[in-house]
Length: 321
Image (cartoon, rainbow, N blue to C red; front, side, top):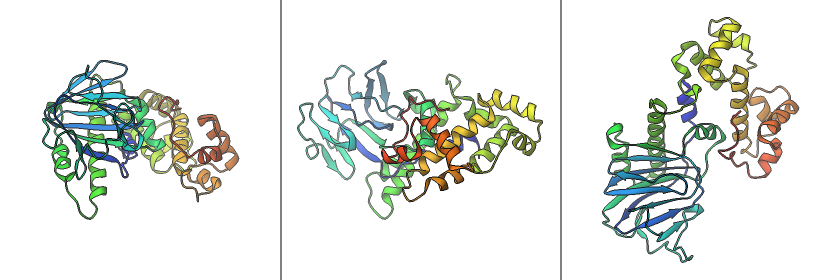
């Protein structure tokens, strides 16, 4: 499993907020739902994404946009349009003065907008929360990732556009996986873009030995790895392995392994029936005390404190290592 696959396996939607949005100009929606990750695919007409900080981005049919920050933004037919609706956490929709728009804007099964046959049509999905493993990846992304229609070859947009209007057994799970597919497609495009500033670990698989070492860390985080044992497994000297790992990944092997283990632990702590000592063991710590010390140093709170505050994933501004 290459590093990109291992990390992209984490942002999995589960009961994601997913809608087909149909709008007739003039229209403007302010989104302040605090979602850490959102995906917009324009299937007809056009739209404009206008963040509070930064330049507006004009979108056309077939364009795919990934929004990787919980900051508020405007979606409209024109960036200078005053908001007519506001989306709050949980998908609650109101007028700017606080009046409910839940019923007036509903257009059918998973459809929403000011016109059933509006000129501008979008598929909009948001992840209400992401795992801590996924947060490692999101922290590396720019605030938004734009993939123009002529830059991607995925047919997932067409499939999602068809399936989002359907009903049936397993429909919600299918839509979640299609949304994941669009997310992966956008991130992969960014990771391979010459203009991207992707971190080294996303491309580390290009070095086969380092890619193999990352596979071992990802798939067997509980193993008592050392620099020497990893080097031996991939057929390098200890010094040579360390140098190549830092060059490819951007940090020493044990630093990467520690941050990976603690991210896994942060997600395991969401499982309230899993004792802290079991979490420690499953991510490679022989002592729960050593684990607790490392966890608090990394996240600023004890494992129990993390769990008690709701085990929310770290803010994207929290350092990854």
